[in-house]
Image 1 (tube, helix red, strand yellow):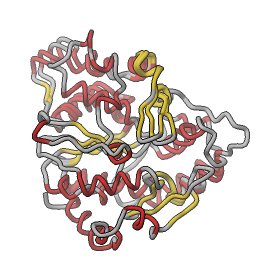
Image 2: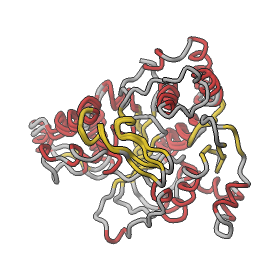
Image 3: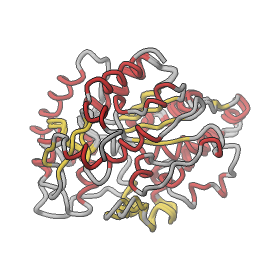
Image 4: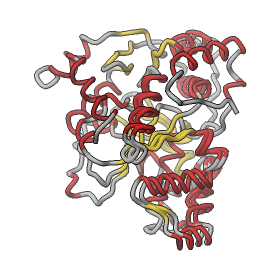
Length: 457
């Protein structure tokens, strides 16, 4: 595909000396030469690899593994997100859209399995030393997920015609959500320090700005390959955004499906309220390496409980771009630009857009991933069924998301942690006016001229 995707990979391969030598050097040797910064965690350094920040013993190895081992087929769909931008919700929506003819909603996999168990997080394969399945043995299309920036995408993804759906979120809410998430383990630095780092672009998978803008520009250049969504839009108009999503994924809802209320069923199933209250998301954990993350961690609000934690310090770190998979700005911009250059390959979505008009964006997503809804499906209300199934309310209340945990190395993330609150604008409950103004200035600086904007409401 011509445009930003190829250009990004050319830039990466010609400017990253470590990448050139990784075939002859061990991952540990490469990591030892990378730039480092103090991260958001009380202990442990962050490493800058190909312009973005990761923790060692985790994400950075996962990125290297993906670049070496992952293969994509033209029919496959890749969900990309910066951490804490609505990943859990979008996973459930996309899975429901693609598989709406395979499962009855009364016995849907989302009722008994976490969305993170149904849609593979590619970096996890490296963490658990799991050989990636032979594509010849898998049905087509497959749905995958990653947090990595556009410039670090594996070459096979660039060379293929697989579609990319990218979802982003207001940076203020992203920062607060990340801080609350990490605070569950009392391992995070004070909020002020984290805020300063975030503003500098130092955050996992950050800088946030570069991450978002990469996909934003790519979605403008290649709208048929990259769908760019905003969490806030999906929240405000779920129906419209879910229909848009389904259309983009190649699974548009038919008139019959819409008439039968299928879109609303999907929205209800995938709602925050539903998923959060499911037993599967309240108990148990998702394991990655020797880390176990409680499933409820993905759904709960995650208030900082330790009086020693300062949101101001953490905010500073976020602004610096020192964040896992950060800088946030670079992460977003990489995919944004790719979505502009190659809209058929990269779909850039905003959490806010998906929230505001779920129906439209779900249909767009289905179309993009090659699972468009037929007129019959739309008439039958299938789009609405998927939106209902994947709604925050539904998923957060499922047993599968209330119990258990996801294990990642030596950390256990409870399933319900993935369902924190599901709202936009919550940053107002955590950031001071001074912090909000500071982040607004960074947002203006990083995104001016890109055409990518964020709404505070």
